[in-house]
Length: 216
Ligand code: NAD
Image (cartoon, rainbow, N blue to C red; front, side):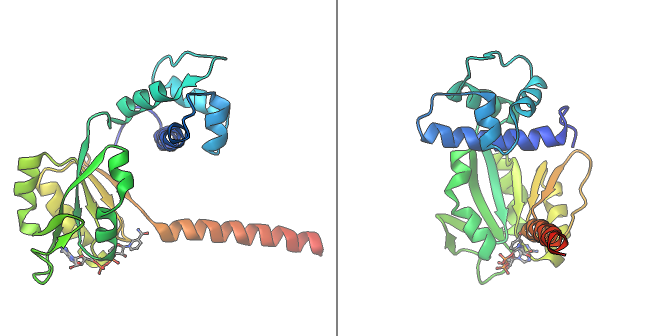
């Protein structure tokens, strides 16, 4: 997945977008790079450097207009027009994601949910009728689906990813705890909450280790 700017920059742009959404909710009209950096747990120089990949953002010393900056970041992230999303796997996670209001607020609309369990197909979740996975290609063609979210068990994830690719969908957010293989023209991200917990566990081990060292 080649986006031009470094991957870490794009990840920070998402964090800045989250911070700006929060400022907008709080009716803050202007924010400096220092404000954004502090709230996004980085610093002003990093914020300016990240923006510099995308041309002149101006406003040095004046602060950025929160709404203008949000619109600019939306254009960079490609969310100024709504992105359509399907969820595959209408289980615990898939159903919870289907009802998450945060997607719509940031420009992502969940248009369909799929499963392969006949006992679930035809039932409703969050206003969406659960469709058989065999309908994926038709729905993708009719509704121009941008992103597929995979929320099936690990053992089924790669086969489902293959079906997503075959349906012509070019981006996948995978929640199954396995790295899926996709062609070079398909963007894939695997979300691992357990990895985040491991990161925090490492942090705890380090800080406990250093306090033990201080005590001895
Ligand atoms: P679940 O068992 O409640 O739901 C899985 C659903 O997928 C079921 O409805 C099942 O019928 C459906 N399914 C199975 N094979 C399928 C196929 N080939 N095609 C279409 N649908 C299929 O499981 P869950 O708790 O919702 O978890 C879903 C996935 O998310 C699992 O892989 C789990 O490990 C993962 N998970 C990830 C995180 C994370 O941090 N990323 C957190 C929790 C769960």
